[in-house]
Length: 501
Ligand SMILES: Nc1nc2c(ncn2[C@@H]2O[C@H](COP(=O)(O)OP(=O)(O)O)[C@@H](O)[C@H]2O)c(=O)[nH]1
Ligand SMILES: *[C@@H]1O[C@H](CO)[C@@H](O)[C@H](O)[C@H]1NC(C)=O
Ligand SMILES: *[C@@H]1O[C@H](CO)[C@@H](O)[C@H](O)[C@H]1NC(C)=O
Ligand SMILES: [Mg+2]
Image (cartoon, rainbow, N blue to C red; front, side, top):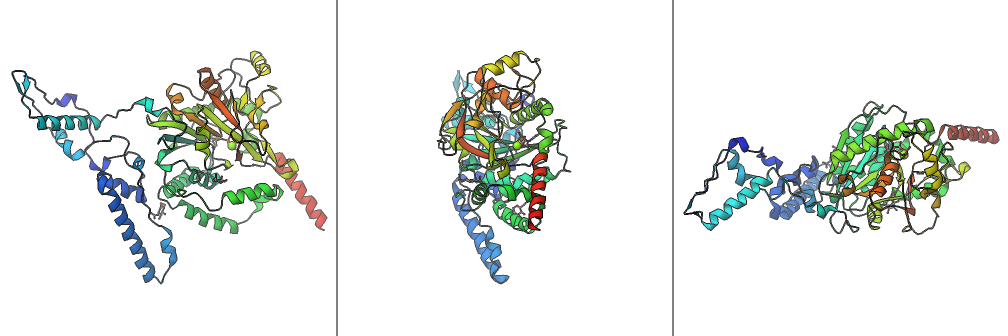
C-alpha cells in the first residue's frame, strides 16, 4: 500500500492570493494594471482589450462633445499590449483556484491493492497535474542553457536587463528617458533597473525618477515631456550660454534626434522598471571638475564598482540573456544600439563614446578613454606601482601608450569595424548575462592595477570571453563645461560685448 499523507510541517509557503497570479514585476499603474488583472483570461484577452479600447474611445468622444469638443481629451489613445512577455514569466502554468484546496488542508490518499494503483487513469492524471501546479506555486525551473544570449536577440526573444546607475541626475532624466523610449529593441523584453546612490539633491533624483517611470509605463511620458520642454523654452537660458559656442552641425544633429518621427513602439512600456536606492558613501562631488581630478579616480571608481555589482546582483534574473549598462548622460545614441552591439556576437562589447566641445576647443573629442588595448609600456608601468594603485587613463601621471578606441574613430568609418579590447568604459556596455552568473564583476578593489569597468573588461578576457569595441559606432556624451571652459566662455562674452560697443 502506498500512502501520500500531507504533512503540515513539510509544507512550503504558497501564494493563494489571486492578485498574485502572473508576473511579479508587472506594471503597477494605468493600463498595465488592467492588463495584468485579465492575465488569467488568456484566450479571451484580445477581445477584452479590444472592448476596453472601444469603451474608452467612445467615452472620450462623448466627453469631448460635452465639454465642447476639447481635443486634448483625445491625447491618450489606449493601445493593447499583446506580447506575452508582459504577462507571464515567473510562476507560470499555475491555476490558483484548482490548488487552493491544498492550502486549506486537503490530504490525498492513494491506495493500491496488491501493489497496483487503484486510481482511475483520469484521477491519476488530475492528481499529477495538481501536483505539478503545487510545485509551480513555489518553484520555477530554468534551463540556463537557453539564456546564453543570441546575436539575434530580438528574434530569439532574449530578455535584456538594462542597468542605469544614477547620482544627482534629476536634470538629465528627460534626456535619458527619451533615449530609453528611442530604443528599438522590443520594450517588452527589457527590464530596467535603476540604482540611485549618494544624492545631495534632497531627493529630487528619486522623485523625478519615480514620476518619469510611472508615466513611461502608462504610455504618457512623451506627451508630458513635450509639455515640459515647451515650458522650459520659455524659461531663461543664462546657464545654456555655452550653446552659443557649440558647433552648428552638432546642435542640428541634436535637434533632429529629439524630434519626431520616432519608431512605432516609442511609447510602449518596458517589461518592468525597478528602482533601487542605496548609498555607498561616495563623497567626491558630482561636478565635472571635482570628479575628474586624478587623485580621486581610484576611490571613485572602486565605489562605482560596488554600486554596479550590487545592482547586477539584485536585479539579474535567471531569464535574462543580456545585460546592457547605460549612463544617464548620453545625449545621442542610435535607437538600435542594443541590436547593433548584439549582432557582433561578442561577450562584452562597447561603442565609441565621444563628446562635443565648443568650437574654440575643436568641436569634438574622444570622451571615454577607458576602452583600450593593453600595451607593453602599461604592463611595465604596472610593475612599478603598488598592488593597490589604480592606473587611470587620460592623465599625464600615467603614460600607458595604450591604443584607445576613442582615438581610432573616423567620421565616416564603417560602424561595424570592431577591435578586440582589454579595458572597457562604462557609458554603454552590452554583456552576456552568463558572465555575471560566472562571477565576472566590476572590481571594487584593485585588479591588475585597475578598478571597475576597465578591470571588468580585463577579468572577462582573462576568463576567456570575447571583449571588443566598435571604432566608428558613436554615442555622444553630453558636454559639461569645465571650470576652465566657463572662464573662457566668460572671456569671449566680454570681448564680444566690447566689440559691439
Ligand atoms: N549609483 C551611483 N551612480 C553614480 C555614482 N557616480 C556617478 N554615477 C552615475 O554613473 C554614471 C556615470 O557617471 P559619470 O559621473 O557621468 O561618469 P563620467 O562620465 O565617467 O565622469 C552616470 O549615470 C552617473 O549618474 C555613484 O557614486 N553612485
Ligand atoms: C499616467 O501616469 C501619470 C503619472 O502617474 C498620470 O498623471 C496620468 O494621468 C496617467 N495617465 C493615464 C492615461 O493613466
Ligand atoms: C533615436 O534613434 C534614431 C535612429 O537610430 C537616431 O537617429 C536618433 O539620433 C536617436 N535619438 C537620440 C536622442 O539619440
Ligand atoms: Mg558621464
